Every structure is written in structure tokens, then in C-alpha cells.
Image 1 (cartoon, one colour):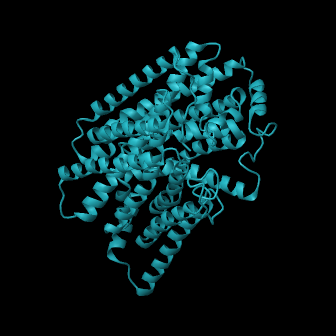
Image 2 (cartoon, helix red, strand yellow):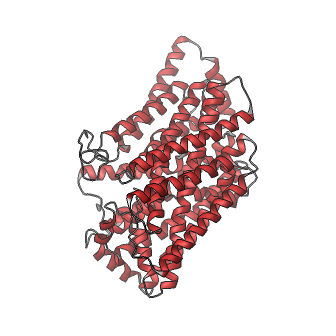
Image 3 (cartoon, rainbow, N blue to C red):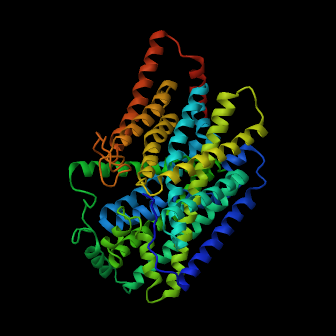
Length: 539
């Protein structure tokens, strides 16, 4: 997922316009990010930005952090190639806002800045904070890598240099710019980028979807008929089972749905936007405003996927990348060569800018979330609990941005050209199997104990990574990360149907046993009792 190579024709006037417009947009965006965040002087502003924004502004920022290339490219590609299963995935992304609404109020009431702050209110000591840092890095790291790979691909191809070396160079340049902006501005500057990403993405995707409908003179029946003929399975485009009809395939599809519904809303960079809201009422209102932005984008994704099937065809889409991620940009290129080339070229440029903004928003958000976990949860509360120096903490956070970003760039360069798109799926599975259960239990179950929390985090993380490591996505298939090796003993491509229930069961089972042991001993540890009372009072 998230490989964005674009088949462009030889250099033309239209391509020059696209490249110049794209580069100008990048420059303005990066300048806006740095300029708006230069006055971040406290760790809190660096982690979550300002809390003075209005609900609409916060809603735009949430939407900007929510819309990633997984939605814009991958799901559009799935809709274009297999039809109904992709439409279901786009719906699942929207359904994930139900979890975000459920979490918004208690998250804001906890007055947290990191995931470790939330866990610390449930259990005392350094252990929960270290566990929170592990969960944050496990989710943010793979997503950072796959987004940087995508950024390098789309930039290199727009410049007309689709070779592997050029893609690696663009990955380094774009990654370096994002890391520099993160060091200088933190979350405060990133907020401006997320707001811009929401607006540009909504406008570009909506305009492109309307252009597709206009190609068929507003006759949706003709559009659907053409898509049914152009899909990977003609005549079955609007039937379930496009991703496979076997029992294993359908179980994998259920796993994908679970990760989209539970994982999309539990990503660390998305939760950071909830931390930045001023009060619980603003938090809930901001999420509702975000829904009004993301919903039209999801609808546009569906129509653009259908349009790509109708006008480009699944065979042409698969010829670019076998996972179908080229569908959106292939359709945008078709529009630029269509009956209205000027409008089409503008749309192509706008879509390219929207894709880049989504990468910048998500990459920046993940880097800042990881820096907060390292600087606040590990350094301040675990390694140096006696030293409360905000200036020193801010310096550690900026250093964490540099090294975390540098590691992500290095891994992205090494994996450039490999089938590493599954890392985005790994990320959402970690969020769904670790972060979501831990938050739901922490906020809505008074019996959740410190031991249960730690087992949820470490158990969920371990089982997710182990099952992915031994799945067909890593070895044993032509589209695997290591296609020439075969050590896959887990034959599902998505382990969410196992990892999510196991994580919930670990949290419930260990907490139940822990409380029974305390009841048998006749007392509750003071730390747990105080944290439970704090949880009851706050939540």
C-alpha cells in the first residue's frame, strides 16, 4: 500500500505546468508550517499545539490528520479494481469516527498531551508510560516509513525521473524537509498544514469526482455499467468477494474492516488532535465537523474509483502497480488528456498537491507523536523523573524528531522498490489491537488494572508483529517483501481477527485475575486505589 508511481508521458507543456505548480505549492506549504510554529516555546505547544482554536479549526485539523494516502490511493485503487469490497472499505473509514466520538470526551477531560499521560492516570509508575511509548512507536514507525516511500515515488515521477535512484533521492529530500519543519515548529506549525490538507483534499477530490460524473453527462447508470465492464472481474463489480471468495480471503477482509474501523481513529497522530481541543464540548464538536469533511472525501474516493474502472480499466491500473495504488493518479492523468485538458491539468496538479499534503500531514504528525512519547513519557517520567526542566525536555523532543525522522528516512530508502506497502496495514492493526483496547478499557472499565494494561499493550504488540512477520505479506508470495524467501506459517494477510480479540482478552483476563488476587489478599495497593479514584472522578 502507498506505492504511488505515476505513469507520465514525455515532458510536455502540461507536465511543466504540473511540476512548477507542485513545487511552488510545496514551498508555500513548508514555509507556512515553519512560520506558524516558530513561537512554540513550551513542550506542551510542541506536542499538541495551541488549545485556543475554534471547533471548526480543530475539525479541519482532525480531518487533515485523518485523510492519509491509505484512503486517497489504496482504497481508491481497491474500488477501481474490485468494486464493492473497496466501497465497503471507504465506508469503514467513515465508521471509525464512531470510536473517535466515543474517545473524544474522556481524552480531552484527561488533559493529556501523550498516550503515556492517559495510561498514567490509570496506573502509576514508569511502566505504563514506557508501554505507551512502545505502542506509539510501534504504530508511528511503520507508517512513517511507508508514507516517506510514497512521497519519494510521487515526487520523482512528477519530476519525470521514475528510476529507483531518483525515488530514493526524493525520499531523502522530502523527509529532510519534513524533519526540519518538525524540529522548528512542532505540532503548532503542523496544525496549519493539516488545515490546508483538509481544504485542498476536499476541494480537489470533489472537483475530480464531479468531472468524472460529467464525462458521462450525469448519467450514473452509464458510469456504473462502464465500471462493471472495466473492473478486474467483469460482471461482478458490484458483488461482494472481489478480494477473494475463499474462507481465508473473507477472514482477511473482515480483518481489514476491523483495522479500518478501530485502527484509523486510534492512530497516535489523530489522538494528538483531540488533546489539542480546549474542552470536552469543543472536542466532540470538532470531531463532528471533521466528519462533514471526511464524508465527502470518502464519497469522492468511491466515485473516483468507479471512474478509474470505467475510463482506465483494471488491467491498465495493475500494469503500473499490482496493488492498484496508481488508480487515482492514472485517472487524474486521463482527465488531463481529456476533452478539457486545461481543467484536467489543474485537477491533476490539485490531486498531486492533495496527496503530498496528506503525506506531509501524516508524516509530521507521526514524528511529533513519537517525539512526545520519547521526550515526555520516557525521558521526563521514566529516565529523569526528578528533573523537571521544560527547556531540557523541549530540546530532547527536538532531538527525538531528528533521530526518529532520520531512522525513518534511512529505512524508507532501503525499502524503496520493495513491496513494503503492508506497513500501513501493520500500523492500523497495531492501533486497533493495542491502542484502542487500552483506551476503551482505561476510560470505560473501572476494573482495568496496571497488569491488565501492560499485558494489553505488550501482548497486542507482540502478537501483531509476530503474525505479520510470518504472513504471506513478508515471504512466500510474489508480492511479498521477500518474494524469494518462504518462512510464512501464518496463512492470513491480516491477523486482526486474532490480534484484536486476544488483546481485549488479555486486558480483561489479567485484570480480573489481578483483582481476584488482591481480594484474596484482602487489600488493594495504594497506587491502584488512588488511580482508580482519579479515574472515577475524571471520567
